[in-house]
Amino acid sequence: MENNRVLQNSNKNKTIAIILNIIAIGSGHFYVNSYKKAILLIISLIVTIYSFYFLSTIYFNKYIFIINIILILSIYIYAIYDVLKIINSSNEKIEYQNLITIFFYFICIYLFLSVFVYFAPIKVFMQPALSMTNTLIVGDRIITSIRDHAPTRGSLIVFNYPKIPEIYYVKRCVATGGDEVLFQDKHLYISFHEGGQWTKENYPQEKIHVIAGKTWVLNPYMEEFPGIHYDENVNLFTTMKMFLSQNDLDMQPIVVDELPKNFNTEFNAFYKKVPIGKFYMLGDNRDHSNDSRFWGSVPQEFIFGKPHIIYYSFDNYKLKWNRIGKKI
Image (cartoon, rainbow, N blue to C red; front, side, top):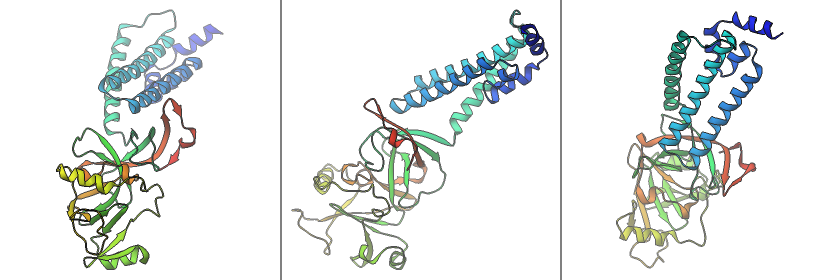
């Protein structure tokens, strides 16, 4: 029986076996009837890739990435080497020409993985802070698709933090270029650049307010996205005044006659008009979010993508099963 298998494998095409293993690792071994090896290779690759994603969402640096690439390449190179060995029969050494073939495919695989990682249409990010609670919680790993068009109001967006572009943030887009933003404690007003008539056609009357001759919507998006909330035990207005005194606030202090004035200060609101081509991003946990109110609007070129699903959630060494696969 064993001799028959060796004889059958000796007639197998080496190039086909190698290409099959590159396209779908293990398939080359299925081609030469080495089923156990095929299954082990598939499991090894899945475990390696999943471990990399897991580690990268806890702590990511170039060394973890390099180690992962080396491990994946090693699995592929072993798969190619082993399938050639099986075809040549287990008693023969790999010929010199076959080593050249392995090196050639090594280069091809490396280039393929490099291009795939760079141009991959999805990325995985971890939610490390409380700014998006209850929409996202600490430990959520979110799958994000890359998008090359402007975000819409109300959508969750992953973007580069304007002050440190190497860091990624996830917030909700509340206003786009030309919109005006007005903030009092627990009250966010948006005046949309489309004008008052458009606003009246798209928002209920009870949420619409006329302030300084303009039409504003109070706390838009809260009904549509229940994760948006304020903390009754926190006075963010006071915190913003402190940041203002340190010249570390994006919004401007103003006096609005139509709004309450019991803030023990010469102004009673903060105001910002979003520049054209930029977007105003706020956390859903409004009183615990470092967002555009403090560091400003996000330019179009800093927009990375849109989160879609929580592929798993892990925090304090506990896996949160109820959040796996949850749509965002």
